[in-house]
Length: 567
Image 1 (spheres, rainbow, N blue to C red):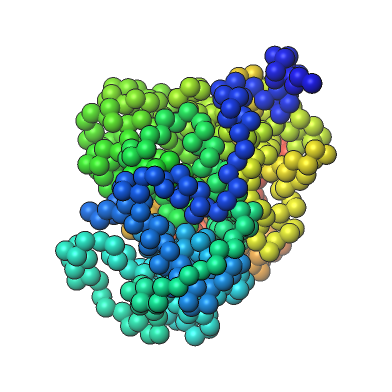
Image 2 (cartoon, rainbow, N blue to C red):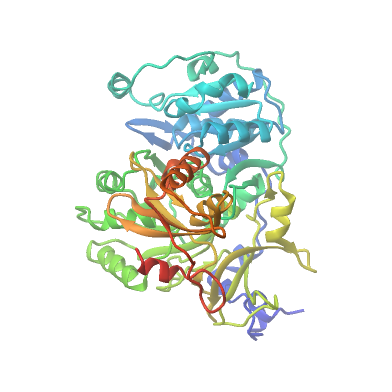
């Protein structure tokens, strides 16, 4: 029986017609996805090219062959320490080589890497280690200040990785001289970890088993742990390789996205599966990233929206080396997209800017523009194994082409679940009569008859802010609102975001008191102290303003635009 896609007849509904499939070959559409571990998929794709460079880190080069050897050695040491299939190990770090070795070593054993934010407070770190029943904590030395005060309470062995462990000796010495020596307490160093006797590990990990836990940024309440399986990660990488991104083995890629983000893990897995030569760049100041791109001249670049302005203001000459210039994690106006595309064109790049759409729950992207399918103003077309539909939020009926509603997605890279949170999982994932698992994204959009997804606005407000060390973090006003509203004397809180030349975005809070309560300056100071204890420091509002009545829209919701006019 012929499908509607094969007969060329359109029903008017994207999830049935799948018009985006015209951009893929029948071979890709019908091909099976890999059924193996993350480690095995990368090994299979590169076993004939072990001498190729895989990683570069401040002058140090690691080949694919070196990588697989290092992963096995780390896996052997972790196994000697008692780590077994299904165990959870918490990793608090950024994208250093040791972090990546650890992540894949755990995968080799069949254990789960719990990748947590470097900005966690002591309380949050303690909670995630205990809640996941982690058997071990691996932490970067830059975050040791969060560990020392709770070391005994954690009750697990702690391995400390140095940010310089893989740097050449001259850089390591220069860097270490600038840093204060720290009391190691009872921590194990990375060198000590590798002193364990190398042993054989029984391979028992299944492809459908959980591999990674990575966290959302708390759009609604506390961050949720997204459980990604081997199949999820591999499906993402496979679909990137099956799409028209023109990845070529041995081509260069600069990776700036931390591995505590789903995007960071997804793009690392994709780069390795493609056999790319990947530079790990951990200095996240946008200007330094722009300067690094000019020096390294990578062929494949993935930058968050917060980095784009610095890149555009950089002193770039010939960009003919650029094959892919991708961005995501935020929205750009059509005017800015034109501006960036003109910049790339005028500097000789072989691509327009490639916009995409994804979520942590999909380990990265699920829709993308690509070389053979690109439309300005869009978020691209779905991956070959993904299905997207637009749903009326009230009737839950699918909408036709061009109609705006909530974006629902079914794809093989959709997470297993939110860790230990069935209620939250059930709120966003449903199974239809055909057995397809659908994720309701909370974002609005529409699909045109060519299969391109267009952004229609967010139900979740997401912004970016820059820390003093240059790190870019996502900022979710709702998280701050909910905390303030939980305090006594507070009836309502609304948080708006102001632009700032140094920090990108800063929060400003408006509060209305309960009944006849009088809010005095001492209570405002108390609110700020609570925020500092329970949320990362960048959530502390630049200003807290007290207003008698919160402005509302005609539908009874907070009128944020009216509040913005009052700042």
